[in-house]
Amino acid sequence: MKRINVEKCASILKEKDNILILTHAHPDGDTLGCGFALCRALLKAGKKARVICADEIPKKYDYLFCDISIPDFEEEYIVAVDVATEKLLGSLEKQYAGRVDLCIDHHPSNTGYADNLLLIADAAAAAETVFKVIKAMRIKVDKHIAECLFTGITTDTGCFRFASTTSNTYRAAAELIDLGAENAKINRIMFEQKPKSLAALERLAIEGMEFFCDERICLITLTQDMYEKSGSSEEETEAIPALTRQIEGVEIGLTIREKTDGTSKCSIRTYDSVDASKLAKNFGGGGHKQAAACEFKCDYKEAKKILLDKCRETLESGETVEEDVWE
Image (cartoon, rainbow, N blue to C red; front, top):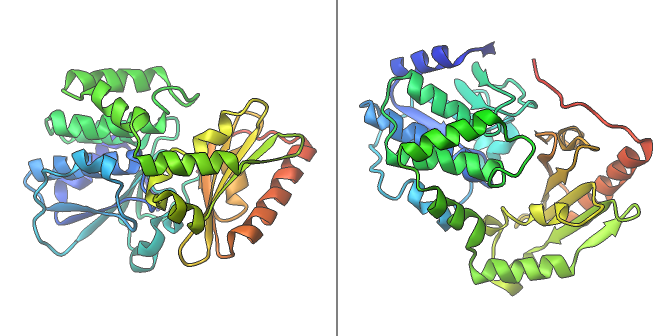
């Protein structure tokens, strides 16, 4: 693995063609915004590129790619965006593990799995870094690219509410608005609109909230039965983990999702007192200090027990951890 800078990354991409872009499973606005912004930029440069994801892309992100015409080609160069570890590729891991040529990321927990790594850990979103790369490639950022990148930034900062948001984040967002990104439209789609099925699922999630350790831990469990009752699906659950952090006094928010194969996945949300990334790393996951995720091969009931034991241990120890910086 070799650490590279923005200019080297841009140089590599200018040299390569037939580029496959990998996004992480259970995709969010940052991985998709990065993927389709980079894809659009490469297509503008006359290259062949496409984006793939292990999971179905939620319909609210259709505007990122609905007008793209993807040429047929056999991939020669593989790029991962906003993917901290190969495990986050989901079902694509088996096919692409050990084959990623370049990773563009902002997660301090990145495991260094790619041959080349562009990692800017203090960027609030990977989209900030992809924006720099596209500009370094001397590719004109049009309205469509700008909206992809703005989507990545606004979703990974919670509409600029998270502590990870910096002055550089605001500057990048302002520049993207100047380049044509319709910020009001995007923020409305991302944060104010939801299908009725998701509203029904949120109601079930809130009704089933559990609290532990003097209400310092809030846990939501999303089961296949709840999806069936609400008419929702795992693809719609991106915003639900944030509900756990909205409860006063909660330091650790856990959202466990039961998967169709009986295994489970957990999204972890914390405040400054607990490092979510370190918690997730105990179970092979990763992320940021206040937002991370991990997967379990066991069912959600066993995963719940394992997670709660580790969370109790963390809170009872009084341990506070500085954010890990991967080197």
